[in-house]
Length: 192
DNA sequence: GCAGGGATTTTCT
DNA sequence: GAAAATCCCTGCG
Image 1 (cartoon, rainbow, N blue to C red):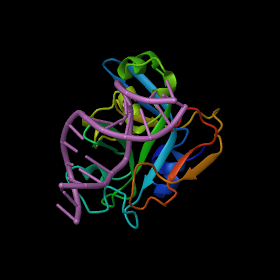
Image 2: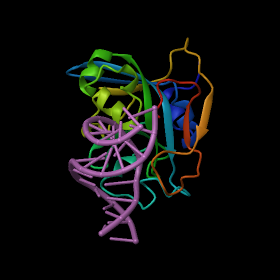
Image 3: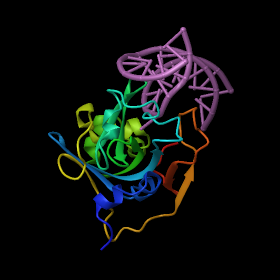
Image 4: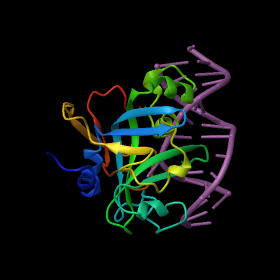
C-alpha cells in the first residue's frame, strides 16, 4: 500500500502539488455527483513567496490557509470567480495548493449545465471554471476534504501517471519566476 | 484565431 | 487608487 491521503497531504507543499496530480475531487450536492481528476496545480508557500495570499499574514479572507493539511481554501478572485485550494503545511503556517484544472470524469451533464456550455474540454480548464463545474461554493471554505460532500481521493490503483512538467505560475507578478506550477505533459484538460 | 476590455470584491499602498 | 492565483464577450480579420 502507498501512503494514505492524509500522509500525502502532510508532505512538503511543492511535493503535495505534484502528488495531487491524478487525485480525484468529488462533490456530492443536491444537484448530483460530479467528479474530476486533478491535472494542474500551483504551490503557494509561507516564506520566500511574495505571491502567496499568506505572505502578509493571516486575514479574514485567507484564514483557512492556516488550518492545516486537508482543509479547503476557497476565495473570490477579481470579484467574479472563486478558486479552490487544498491547504498544506503545518497548522498555523499558511500554505496551499491551487487546483488549476481537472479532467471531467463523472456528472459531465451536470457540469455542462452549471457551466452553461457543452464544450467538455472547457468544463475544468481553469481554476474558476472547475469551481463552477463542480458546484464548489464559498461555504466549502475551511471544510475538511477527507470525508463529507466535498472530498479528495487518491488515484485509482490502476491509473498510471503521465509525466509531470513544471513551470511559472499564472496570473501573478510577484515571485512570478518560481516554477511552482505542475501539470501532466500532453494533457488536453489543463488550462491554456 | 487573437487582442482588448468589462465584471466586481478584497487587500494593500 | 490600483492590483489581483479569472473568465467571457466583442470586434476584427
